[in-house]
Length: 117
Image (cartoon, rainbow, N blue to C red; front, top):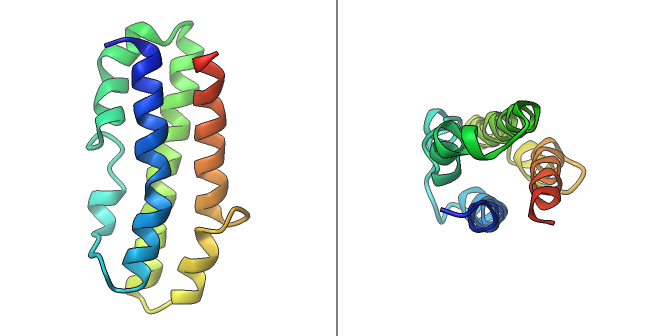
């Protein structure tokens, strides 16, 4: 697949996480922290481990995006863990633009947008 298409799809997919977290926090959706934390289970994670490695050049670009994507999933898992522990406020705070998930998501999206240009 073309790099631009993969980036656009990844941006859309990862942007949808904020809505999923709202549903999760409100009890409308069930999420599992170990699954959410796996950065190689989403479509972009699978792509970045294979095709992305040869398409995202130089290697430093691939490694940076790979690292930002892994951080996105690591922080997403902590949102799930907080809610499951009963720390609803902490989970809600994390998904704000200034929260840990908001910042990780923004960093990943901003870096991917640079690739689209």
